[in-house]
Length: 259
Image (cartoon, rainbow, N blue to C red; front, side):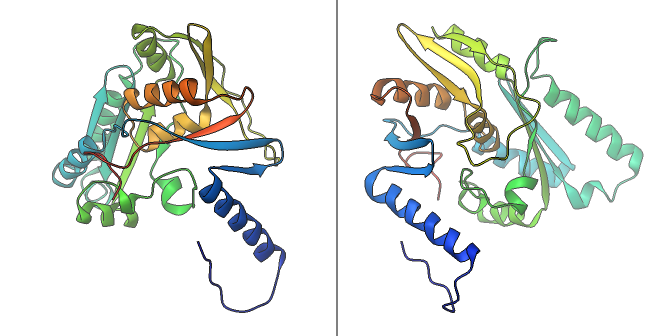
């Protein structure tokens, strides 16, 4: 990987970028990197490809173009919706309000119990206007090119909700023991590795914690719960060092492969 910039002037910003590039190169070459002072992160590979609801998202976007908005709810795990921003603001407010209320109420039905713990709602605004190293950009989503372009221009407003309690119940039905941790009121802005455990899972003598970051990715990239289970199994089967951090890569093949 080579980064090319014009000019030879060094500033604190370009020095930081150079150090970051060196860490990225280290990770690509060795499979590990130590971007944070108190943590080494190791890449491990899952044996199965990522499974997502992106094909359903594609249909939701097509429907929203025709009907102003559309949504999907998948059990007690995840729901998402899309509004066609230009069309919905050009219809009478009473009709727009009725559509929004129906769509949002349907999406909120993913929370089946009063005490269900929701992940903070995810939207396409953050990955559209802010760079994220964690999220796949819309330009490589396995949807039509027309829709990819529309996602990058803000033609659609997308919201997704992930039910942490519903995910826990889904895992328990598949033989896992689970324990939910409370989400913090505030997230520290210091330089330490931002590890915020949300859900602890256990099977037999092996256990691991799923962080807030992973669930945010799952909600933003519309992962099926099977993908989270595959990630958990991969870490428990492949990880050999207690106290280490791991990033799981999925083979980029199959129906839901990134372009």
